[in-house]
Amino acid sequence: MSLRRSERLPERAARRDEGVVGRLVQVLLDAGIDGVGPLRSARELADLARRDTRTTEGAAKKIIRSHVVKGGVGGFVTSLGGFVTMPVALPANVVEFYVGATRMVAAIATLRGYDVDDPQVRTAVLLTLIGSEADEVLARTGLTGGGGRVVGLVGQQLPPAALLILNKAIGFRLLRGFGEKAFARLGRGIPLAGGVVGGGIDVWMMKRIADHALEEFPPAGPSVSVVR
View 1 (cartoon, rainbow, N blue to C red):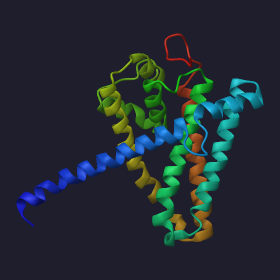
View 2 (cartoon, rainbow, N blue to C red):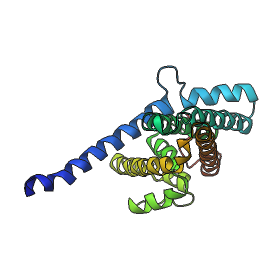
View 3 (cartoon, one colour):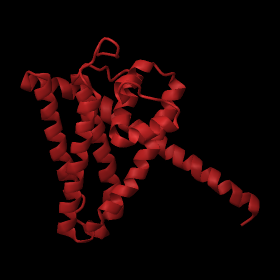
View 4 (tube, one colour):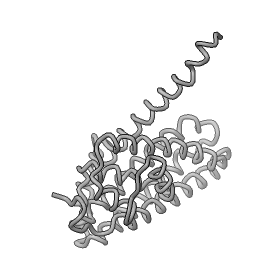
């Protein structure tokens, strides 16, 4: 391999990774927040839950319960094949998990009075997915939540270019998390035990994301972008 060609390989890999991140972020925004095909949008999900429970907090708890259960079932089913099916099942389950988590967070934000059509709020939803890593990502992109990561971010009215950079940084962190998630599921090598491990991890992760969403999206005040 020539030196010139070898020097281009890192650039190609970087462009490829950036393309994967861009597609991932777009899938989460389109499917997780806006809804596609049979998937209801986060706004529709919030409206249905509120209609059933009559209270905002009751609706949020209902949405969280359903997504925690779905996450556990999805993790269990896609883990049953052990190492034989892991290369196929894990990527599908990971994307499905984070689409569901995005939908859950966006529905909670809607119930709490935030406008999920607003680009600032949409980025804040993605930021919630990475939990305790949010401060690090914000710092690396030269941003700060200020007065609470999510509410502070929404109130800053960042330009589109800054939101794009932040979305990509979140996407890269999620991709790194995919590998960590796969490593944590090495118990899948034994089919039935793998199902239990996979389901348990997804339940724990979905519940942790839900807790972050409840903390980071308090009832909207006059300074944030509220549902119109």
